[in-house]
Length: 563
Ligand SMILES: Nc1ncnc2c1ncn2[C@@H]1O[C@H](COP(=O)(O)OP(=O)(O)OP(=O)(O)O)[C@@H](O)[C@H]1O
Ligand SMILES: [Mg+2]
Image (cartoon, rainbow, N blue to C red; front, side, top):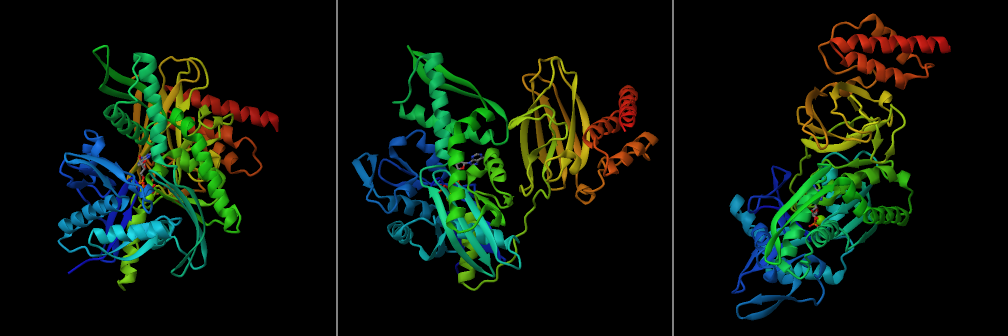
């Protein structure tokens, strides 16, 4: 017996997925569904591929090959230092080792023979690259039913997750992986997927972002320790690994301290790396590269003969789309919804399994995904990463709509004034740029330790499958932190009501009713200010309550005097 399999043979990572009861499921190979596209030869020329090879690469960079996809279809040869001398390995042979590891892993996993497969390739791959990929499949003992374009594959899985409607839709697939950037405009209707335009850069991806951080590390080692490790292959491999790990952490955290012991020696003494990195720093480094992906995306839209307003949905594919700045830039450039509900590392592989099923006449079921139905964010209480928030009503998104759950994300904000005593964190959900037009989820105060204006405050949202968000606030550089749990399970239905989701409140007091009446009045002009004061009043208990009430009364007095 055999099963139905789809393979994403990626530059950095590969995935094998299987159709189980009509639904695509990734197979864990060597403990993970994401299999590094790295091959390592032992001294006798035997190959291992995947995670083990990636780990050993640090010790034996001279016998490891990665990113072979970049050279497939060319006459490039990889020199591999074996005991018997140098051996020249073709990109097809390297790719075949990866495919073999996927095949073996999947066979061990499910006990079924893996023979018939669909393999994905970039839409821009030319004939030589496609033939070389087929050849790699044959070398691995696979019967390749079809080569499927990666964006088509991703679109297929998004359609299966309910993105397709009852009319033709134009979908933009933005795929930023480890080594390549690909953007495609597709038209999808009733099972027909047509690629209208493609653009991209075959040498732009996460590896380049890693290189930027490696440069930061190298500079640090040079200026602080006077050492240059550029010629030290092992140190460089470690720095590259460290750079990638740091980059990935910065998608979730806004800052981190990178420490690595014994990275080199200087006059016989060990040198340790110890650097602080921030998300902003990384964003500044990669900004020109991200800008070029947006330009290419705009070009693809133009080539498809349509305008940006014609895009119905943007699907994020590739591990590098987890970088928050990628999403922010796309959201700023296009009005279309940005979708990321399918794991961006797996989308292409899952689509390949769906295609394999369709080729063999197997019924494919709808894919179910759990996503954040609304964007969650807070009222900006100072300078934003994207500029200065003058207005107290500015909504700062932290976790965007359609993010797969569970999810966790952090943002940094800055205090307004010197010695600011506290900040109020008010959580909203919704898609409007103004807090007052979104749904208020809840709020709380966070007392600050004395600090000058512009003191960074980090806000982390963790959103689980039950619709509970945990908000963690911390004052950067201190131990001062606070965690609060809020429930947003039913808040989506209250979009118009402006009701706090914190349930256990008594009936509204007279002052609250007075405030709400004004907030409901379409002619009332100072809603944002009032909303801030009302939030503060509702969230304050004990001694502060009287003060918050006074602020509200003062406000009423002022607006009445005004009118
Ligand atoms: N959370 C994250 N934040 C930032 N980058 C990430 C994150 N997770 C993964 N990456 C990066 O994503 C890249 C791998 O993406 P992916 O597996 O989609 O690439 P690939 O399909 O092998 O490459 P390609 O599409 O170029 O052939 C790596 O550079 C990795 O560091
Ligand atoms: Mg890819």
